[in-house]
Image (cartoon, rainbow over all chains, first blue to last red; front, side, top):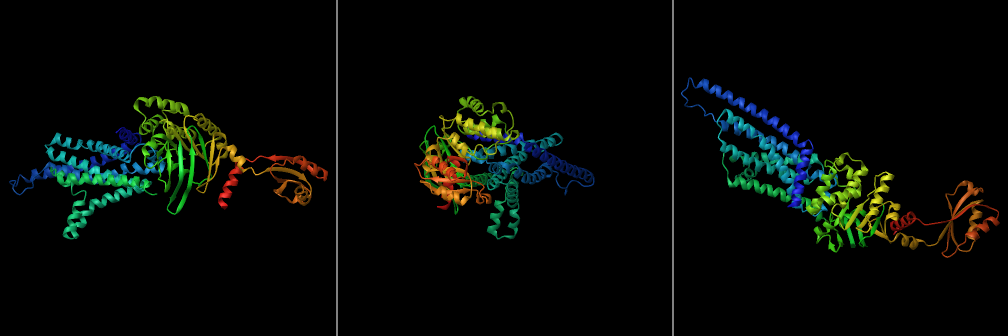
Length: 261
Length: 318
């Protein structure tokens, strides 16, 4: 446990002593703020149109204006994609840098297990992710001030975010463990995540069984229930097992040196 | 204590180390000597549990590097050729991290850190970021990292590489100061380093051990006979005949033979003499008697360089 904490604090600290954490948080918040504003302006525009038209129509046949569906869900859907690009940049250095600088030799010759190293790194990166995600709570809070959003689906969406983030970090760490080049790590992670993201597209052209499989391995598919306010065990299990799988493979990759007799 | 038995390690088809065996007792400094690419680093990586051996065994304080890897790792301090430093950390936070993962108890943490930084001379740099330190100080921090948990075995891979002469002397003094407390393996390709600091030498070439023993025993073991160097003025053919005629002379070779020598210029000759013959007086007498000018005559001591070259070239031929 002590080894794990030593590793965890060291990793977390190295995000904050370098500009990495600040630049990524800054860029992310800027982009998400910009998108949030635009989505909000769009909603405003609809509201205006709605009030103008309702003078002539009796309300029947008009679409319902829903703050959650039209702003919150929209906004989250866009943020997903930004995270897909940002997380590989958080994870790229985790093992690649250790390999390049030779510090992996220090870790592997110290009485610390691979699981402790891996969990320290995973949770440090996940903590940074959670911190930045927590900062985005400011957007629903703004809605709360001017409107009346339903907080249930917002909280479940955030739960979905944490699970999705864990998956992103898992894939990123795996990519970082197979190379000592950070650019390669970032591209592998990004490519892998994008593929897992778009995989249900090809489901439309596949046979019924294949379609079902492709549909259920898509990492974005499982997020939709969360954003609707539904916590389905199926989705939770999917993300947790996905995280476990990536971490397991990573630990095998790191230890593989020890098998190559 | 370190024991390595019949250790072999290959990477695919390439054999890096073959059938290496040696022992280092407690408190000893063992010099592991070999040219670059001889298999030194590979052997050390097996000893530190970084790589598994292809065959054979290695143990540290009686613990096997495969079966009881964690016990071995607790007992070993390792300074790889490239010091494993996190350049964005300060010296003290780095050493603090290393001490924790090496299992130093919290109660001793502070005193161990202070003692190690004092010993390696980095105490006044403790709050500086490692990335801003000079190469010499980085090497010291690397050494501190290997010492911080007070390991019984210390493995240093080329600890003086890339340092300036003063830093080299300082690091060597630091290493010598550690004698007695730790078993130390010092890997190097620099001969004086070994002859100055080590109690025992193992010479490795192309993955095999080609020589082993104390610096003195290695020299006497290889000393097949006396060698003289004589600088003489005169026609080289004539002088060679003259020297070969002396009782006890095995061989005469001209050193850097020049055109001037055959015309009667000055020339140095290396004379190999059978053991047990001191023929310096005889050589002097016969050269002077024959009317040639004797400029210089001295016995050549065999240095570690010669031993090293002799052993490694033998190894290459065999």
